[in-house]
Length: 477
Ligand code: PFF
Image 1 (cartoon, protein in one colour):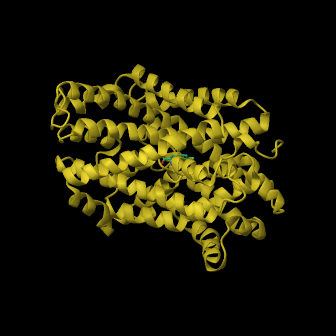
Image 2: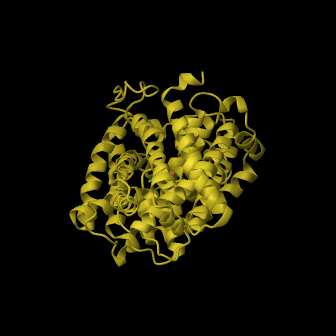
Image 3: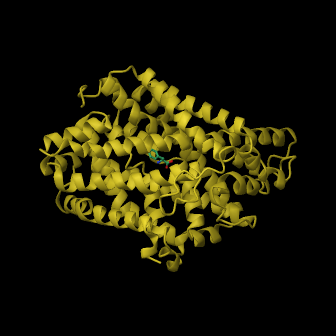
């Protein structure tokens, strides 16, 4: 299957730091800024956050190490690396199917990810023009800085949603940007983007959080995020949402971390780097919550707005805050940077496989897959307007009422990513050669034992149970 055995030198990170930045860039994205606050807001706040952190510690972080080690050991595409480790372990190459499920899931995720990132671009422009207006009017530091009213600001998103052409144009621009970076290669494209965009991202996030803690209702946000109402944790769907979010946010299950691991050097200590990446990603999700909710609360808005939280509630809130013109613009720029470093990792998985399998030039592979992603993404983009009535998955419990966008998001993050994570855990915990696996982890003693226990027992049991619960929520009811 994997004809081209080892990734070429140009497809290697130039340093351990570059690997950590790129992998953190993959993990930190719209999942942290848009999906995490949305899910937390809709699933009862603190209970969801507590379950989420448990899922990260016990399931996602151990799997992150499992994925990066499959890649680093295989030095191939995700499918090539999984098959390689299976063969070396004397196990069936069918274990490579874990990466096939992942590759399909991640390509599907990219289709709607580019749609949301397109909205972000639209808001970069609209908040940018607001800022220019406020600067010209000399009221950039005032509250209610823009000529438009709050009601008008809340209309930006519905107006965009009812304009299919505009949505599709932004989606196309973002797909093109992703294709351009991936076509430039691992070192020349993805790494360069991560090394520039991620540090800027962290600085902007820090600035906005400080602003938000000073001007917003910080105490209420802390209470909302950290004081769990445990009765909410046992609502059907909450644990499923928390696990799905952990997979989505850490870029797990789809193979992005296998792909990035393949470009890491032998000297990189994967146990250590996995810890750093998981910590950074979870930290950013929580900090993003602490940046967003104080502002939302301080102007008396509700946290459970759903996917419109970032695009309707937040811009309206910024509008009423002193200096909101500047912070609002900075926020959307930051979200765009985060989205880019994640979307390139989503595309890289299939591009690496196509170049390996069909010996296709990288640029051609990126272009063709980009076109495919754009085409399928139209379903998600248009599900807010022209295709609003379509319900593609009436036969899956819980998905009956979902349009294309929610259906593709739900089926990938709540089913496919956990399923492929489950297969990865069983493979690494039970069937892959123990010696090879242990050597790749750089762990030893009790930590190694704990990791093996989590991968072999906790991950399969917990993920399996949560998957079953997700499909048959009546068990909990
Ligand atoms: N982790 C990204 C985010 O939080 O936005 C999304 C993502 C990237 C999911 C890469 C899956 C993936 F393979």
